[in-house]
Amino acid sequence: MNEQQRSVQNIPKIIIMLLILSLGGQIIWSYQLPPPNTKIQKLASPPQSGLLHIFSFGDTIVSAKLLMLWLQAFDIQTGQFLSYQQLDYNKLQQWLEQILLLDPNSQYPLLVASHLYSSVPNPEKQYLMLEFVYHQFFIDPSTRWPWLAHVTVVAKHKLKNLPLALKYAQAISANATPSMPRWAKEMQIFILEDMGELERARLIVGGMLASGQLTDPKEIKFLNEKLLALEKQIE
Image (cartoon, rainbow, N blue to C red; front, side, top):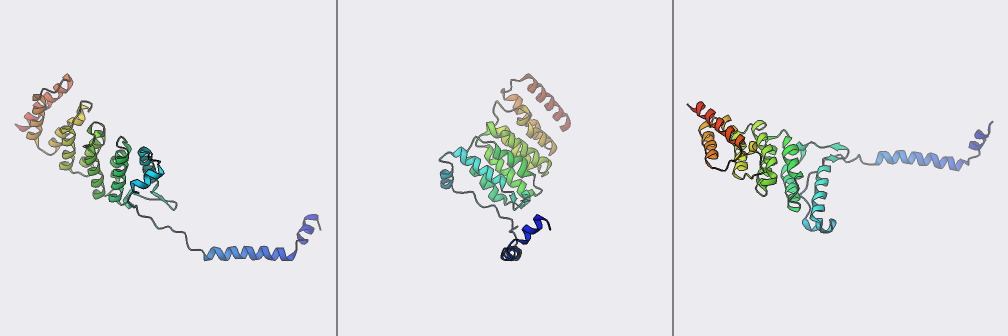
């Protein structure tokens, strides 16, 4: 009998019994535990501004970032990844609005609304996100126009809703700033063409040329060519 066997035999029987009872107790206890909670939690309303003020020490930018981080982490629950389809989009819109109120200069809420949350295969939820971006655009057109331009494309190609796309494109044109690119201002012309509204498109192009506000020779040349092309189609 070697030394290891003798050391095992020298263990008091009471200790061995306690170990066996402990192991058995753990096994029994594990069977008595309730199954892990895999229920998906619903997205609640965003926290009140007073509570955010406390946690961020009064810094609204920090509050906005905390909300955005929490919102993006919400789609991971109990080890599961939630699809955007499972989110309450009315509550989601409240979160995004609150974040922009706290940090109006942040572009990220508009980015996720126009590129991520609008990608859900649900026309009603897509529409909510598109309208959210549309209404937020008017607060600061000079910096928020790219997101409205993107949802204009979404409305046209994904929702197949040309009147909605036209509404967004017209908003961009009506609130154009010098920093906006030419293509963004002229989106409405091409949408009107797709709708068969050639006369309306012609009037808009003619109005742009007659306004005297255009200074770029390339833009003027393009619109003159577009005007001629529209007139030929109308004939």
